[in-house]
Image (cartoon, rainbow, N blue to C red; front, top):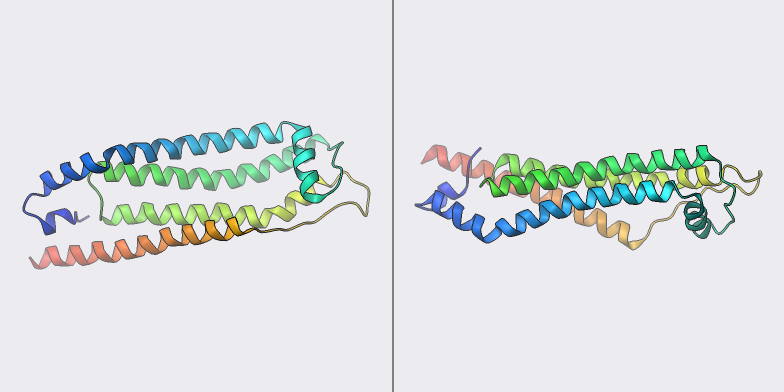
Length: 192
């Protein structure tokens, strides 16, 4: 794994130390934010699905129907669906942690950094895609206790979904750009 700094300057160790001083605080902050986000979302999922009144109120407003009287299995099924989505979000957060840990270690424009950057995009897209695809399933689950004819299948998307997809697609594109740059730097190092 090639360190691009060693190719472009006479003092790679000094350059890396200076770079870490400039971005170190940011790397630590982003790693902390990724960990806090993963725990916070898990907390939100658990507290939401363990509160039947909150589930009935939230999904009832979305589906425009009264969902009171949900069965425990519905809450467990809804929780399981959202826990699956959280797993992909947590994997994206772990990838953020690993990427910025690599940056702190001086692995900035390296092949392993590009892999972590790509994983952020892929795991994030998987979480967002699963969220979009399971919205109809969640509607079926929370309305399953209703009489025939009142059960609901609903799908919706919003502009924020598209923004998230574009943002995460940008991570994948940047990973490919950085991978190509790291490969070019490795080729250049072999020539020199």
